[in-house]
Structures are given as C-alpha cells and as structure tokens.
Length: 235
Image (cartoon, rainbow, N blue to C red; front, side, top):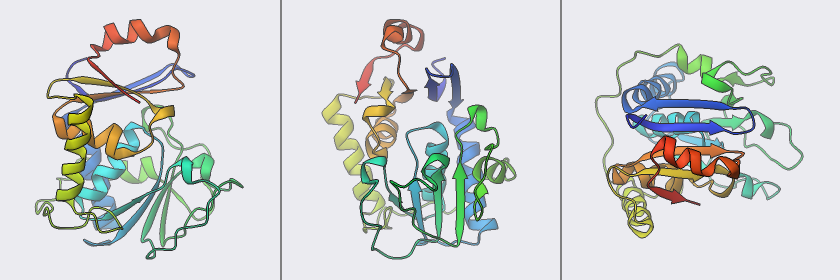
C-alpha cells in the first residue's frame, strides 16, 4: 500500500480507491488534454472548482495547473454567499449535489463538468442539463502524454494572481508547520479540511502520500493507522 500516492476511503459506503503516482499522473494528463485539447482552453484561462477533498478533485486541480489554467476554489464554507464577482470563468467542475442546491450559486462557464464522485471513477448516475460528466470525458483522454512545456513559477496558479512559486512556498510552509516530511503518510479527515493547499499540495510538496477519509468512522481509526502506515494527521 505504501506505493500509493493518494488513497481515498468513504466509510459510509466501504469504498477504498488507491492511485500510485503514475496512475494519478495518467488522470492528470488526461484532464489537461481535456481542457487544452478538447475544450481549447489556453494558459491563463480560468477554472472554477467546487469539489470536496477526493482523488478525482486531485486529478482536476493538478490537471488544470498542468495546462497552465488559473484555479478558483470554492468550498462548501462559501455556500449561501454572494456569487463570485471576479473575472468570468472558462470552465467549472462541480460536485453533483451542489448543482441546483438552494444553498449554492454555481458560477456559469462555457464548459461545465459535473462529478458524482462515484467509486472508481464510474459515470455519474444523473448528469444535469448543460453539464458533461467529468470521469467519462477525462477517461477518453487516458494515455495522452502530459504537457511538455510545464509551468513557470511566475505564472498565476489562482485567479487572484497568486503565482505557482508563491502557492508552492505556501504549501511548503504548511507542511513545515505541520511537521510533514518526505516519506510521511498523511491521514486527512475530509469533513474538517476543504482547502486543497492543505490536504493536497502541502503533503505533495513535502514528498508525502495522502490518505483521505470521508464520513470517517472513528472506531476504525486504530486499524487504519496500522493498515495504511499513517505517520501524520491533518485536520
């Protein structure tokens, strides 16, 4: 299990999905190809991400960044607030339960993808009008080589102008403050930690692997620490 870079548990359903760095990289490259190749987005385009901590969320974020796309993250903590007033978005990725929720005002975009977050990346059972199902759309590009030009530290990673260099430095600072180091295996309670800077980028920047637990059953805590080789905790 130690070769898995990101592992996802849902204790309510019994799901366990694990991806090695290579497997996650395949999804990241496919997402980048979907955005830059099929959708025709370019460096500096803007993506809205309304997704919880999940392995598919990691693929979306890392894929968007690999394509040089600026990201606007909006967690459930922002639900019920006024819609974003910043620059228009070119693409959105939205968790299915947030579409049509009276608590939510999902920003519009020319390209809109919905994620049902089904086990193993299975198709969403109900795709709203005007949206495409992300897992099948990205799966069509699996095997596409990753972008060859990379991103520069001075390019914007987020829509507020934070550069990749600044974002990486912030992630490294979080890792340092939490004592996360290379080789650690970090357990994350997804209910307590939405911000991808913390649950995703801080461990990855430090060279650690991630175990995400949704609907965490505390009675399984000790067994999970042992079975997954957990060395650090987040949130």
